[in-house]
Image (tube, rainbow, N blue to C red; front, side, top):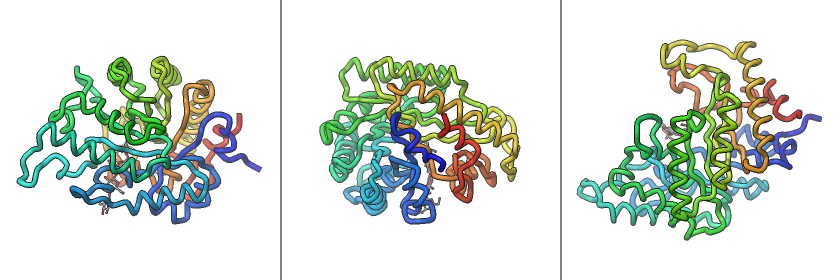
Length: 334
Ligand code: G3I
């Protein structure tokens, strides 16, 4: 019989997947139980969904996901405590609608992190504490988010300190995308180097890994793994998927590929790319402590309609009928 992902990688790292409350109660349940040893709530623990209003928490969705993990012996990764996206407006404004002060925003951030991590204490092995705080281009290393504008650069270290105080056993990650492009990678490297120098309780860097069948190259991938590992940080691949569309091309002609099908050429290229990616992960076994896919199967992926409306994507190892694709073979047979 064919090995599952989690069996094939049991001596390497847990294999995770991003889930919604619907996916842990619907037709993908068997596949999740069979293949994965870790789950990440795709949206349910983000600030907007879990903390929609001041002092109002909506635990229901995230609780359902954590309970599913506990019932099936699947570990849970937390995502995410501090992000400029999906953070509700109330977080940055007072009751009169004015922007809050640095002190007030720090107090709210501390309260949020403390409440959420306390609720799940002991149930989450790793947290994405701060997500996407670094800009893709430009000179600086800090994204011009409300957190940065109101608090200043130390909001990042504060977030890690608050998190560590709540659950000293949880592994704390800085998580970002485009970590293979030299510009962004070096910015992130500067940021995490500073944090390490200040003895901030950060344990790892999450490479989101929203890739395509055209990128990254193996050299780029290895460079980012080794660069972050050189700081003594764990590396986790946190949001892996391999789009069948080229990103460069999209920038030039947004409409291209609309409504297209999963062609034999895409299938071939994707299988080869996934094989390269996992060959590389295994090669850096000690440095990598987890690999998580962003969604279960091609039936539902966040890449459908993104960034091109109306366009379907096929970025995962299981097809729209939950059957393993060609790419799956190259990942489990080594
Ligand atoms: O739940 C509401 C629903 O009630 C409403 O009717 C509907 C109408 O728009 O929206 C639904 O919420 C959507 C949510 O996904 C759940 O499906 C949001 O609009 C939509 O913005 C949200 O997208 C998520 C996105 O993060 C938000 O930026 C994606 O599912 C999720 O996959 C994506 O994940 C991010 C990671 O957290 C961080 N890294 C990048 C990654 C991909 O963008």
